[in-house]
Length: 210
Image 1 (cartoon, rainbow, N blue to C red):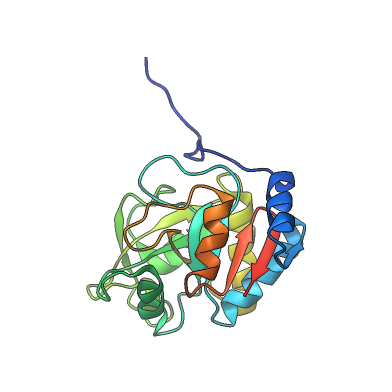
Image 2: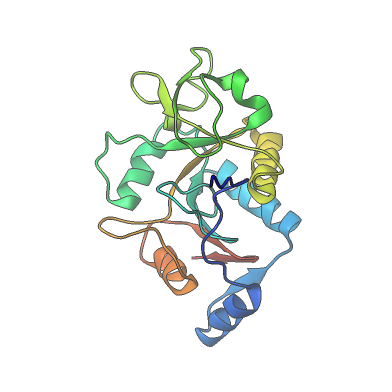
């Protein structure tokens, strides 16, 4: 029997009530925002060059972080690849991937659209200088597309980022650090903010900053 899925967000999920209690017990400073407010605040920070973590919704099944357990940032700064690889403890030559609004994919990439980040595409020559952080030396890029249906929050975040910057693309790499698996619980997510070079963390509907 063949089983099909609409998405790969099939893992664990933590409710805001549990996250709020954890934050309160740890006496951390955090701001609770609705989805629209959170999108605006996160997009503004990315446009300013900040690097954030996102931990909300159900965890992804499979090998790729698809926006629910991710490190997110602007793809525009020329040093963003180096900064993120340094935060994650990775070799400097290793590429990072983009998420693009599916309806804008062909404006930036040549290849096959895929919402699971499975295929390598080519960055268009006239766009490579706009998104250097996610453009490998050979102009390749392993792209994830997103729609309102596949991930409404991430789509809205990119939409707001595009409103500010003109770019319908953001950096997406897994929320994990050298020698460790992808962050799976809120305690470790909070730890990742304070033990790394991340500037902010979206934790459910809470925004935490250093």
